[in-house]
Image (cartoon, rainbow, N blue to C red; front, side, top):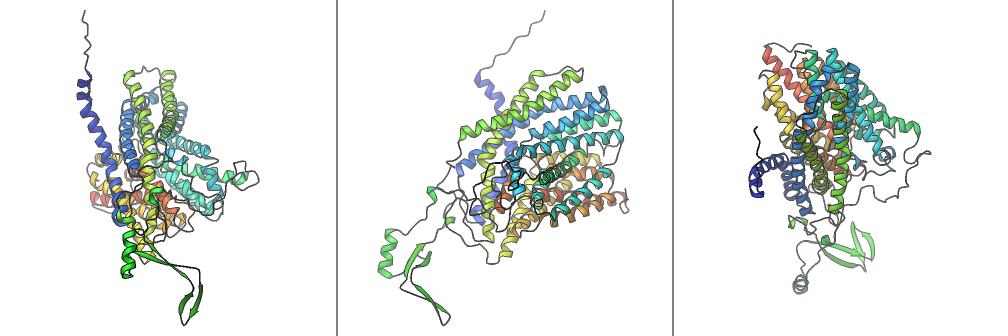
Length: 623
């Protein structure tokens, strides 16, 4: 009888084995973050000439985000993905169509709640003023749980429709064309409705937060499993299309929720409103945080003595008047008996890091506890649902049980750290820069400082164009760093037998995202209604979809899902809301994510038509 001896490792030996593995995975996550962080920091320091406020807190937060993503992605690989793949392979063989569709619906809901980016929606309503957009305010505050729930239901319906499409062999075009037509019609209707119009940006952005690292792999595993069972030999169809539906149906769900509350008259300011009263604020934009470290710097004793000797103050000063009787005499303003005051101009660009290195209102342990609680609520129900499905519905024994449970624990730890890191790092950095970007074209108080600062450019239009260029390169560079896009590029190159190269797809998607974010910044800077910028691209997409082949439609529309990862969503949302809060007349900063999602679909389908023509040697066939 053979007995297996257990090998005992010392702590040092364990660290030697795990060290390289942890090092490699940690730096793999850093590679997805470094460009975004470096670009934001350099733009604020070198272009805007402003120091980084709460620098140590932001640095700690970014490091925690990298660790959180390392644990979370490893947890997905060890725990959630094996469960999803097992069910995807076994469920279609052993169950009837109604059971499969019911499972797909519940899977979509559970995966949405487990998405790291969905937590951002819960905190997005802090800067919305109820007197300016009462329905939007209530959706983000009073009805926040309803909002997240209908987004999850929308994803559930989308996954169910995607699975049904595989069974019936329907073209994705049969879903896209009527769905986009309906959404454009509802968007036009909301445009002429005073209460619904401010909700449009939120509704379209909700479609972008649903296609993250949890939803996409799980629903694709189920979709590919179904395609194998139904014998779909077309590789261009296998697994594609669900991500597209999961990004469109939630938009419809949120618009329907908004319309329902309009009918009920139960949002802020209406007769049936039951929420807590809101203390009105004099200013529409949230006041940026200030600290004692950012008080105005005055003239020193030496500078005052030099002024007494030669009558000339320091070169950088402001001249003010107090009291007196101003009169207009021959085109000149003359002040009699007034007091002359010289104040030292604040040189904000003198330092790279401000003295305020940590936000005193942020309690580390409290935020960690909140992140852990949110992670448990998001991950555990989904895992229990998957485990119960395997145990009760399918006669399938769970393999590698210890490894799967370790993966689930890693996923919970990773999401806890990720939420904490977002709170400490990426959200403050994005909000800080977003609040300061309008300095290129507007006079405002920089984030975390005191006193107004003049715009960087004399022409407001020039400043707004510079801000849009900043948005373009931010979206372009960040997209190229998305791991999901790299995986999509390899899949597409394989499907098209090398006709659509991986590098070409990645460049096409990055270009589309960059253009989308740039247009989103223009939308906020010029206060352009979102529908003016969103409906024309989608109408163009309807035409491109009609004349494109099925395989290009499938991965072209799904390409937008590879651009809304766990880093992109909170960063873009925080930046958009920060810019919107500092531009006069702008109610909110939503809509940038929606424009960042439509851009890559256009570029990929357009390039796909060129590739099809080159591959066939004739104009692309009308599919």
